[in-house]
Length: 225
Image (cartoon, rainbow, N blue to C red; front, side, top):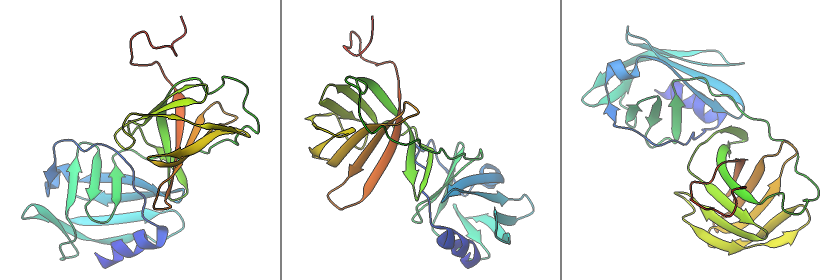
């Protein structure tokens, strides 16, 4: 287990967000096969083989191998029981370590540069999160965060932000201001994606990359007739 933890620590742990479905903890059938995550732009593959061995592979590093088994509702790696490993659908969570793996290889997104100036009304509309920055890599993150923008009025929505209407200040190339969630800055990238940056009271900065979407609200003023 220490070998597996060591390579994850060296690479820097990445949290891939996602809602967990019905859990199947310690189920060998649910865990067998390949699992992927991305850390600092590097794709990591974790394989649980049917013969009770596991392999962790990352580009530029020697593979890490060991043994695993499902035991008493948890997983033992190299004969030691780590924090609980849970498989749910196409996600695997290593509880307590902040590590999530997916069944499919994860591709990172390279954000475009921000526009230096914002044309009037360019941010207006309804936006949903498509990617989020995790340890220096922008990865798929449909986490439910959404935005309504009309002029300088913004509604921040989603599980983490609630539904809060704020009035932001017009700055060079952005809308920005203090909110209950922290200091918010909204800009438009050259690839037509909106960049939402929130620096919380604890000083932690979250960055989300958002795409235009059809508003779920009937008769919403942002929907063009």
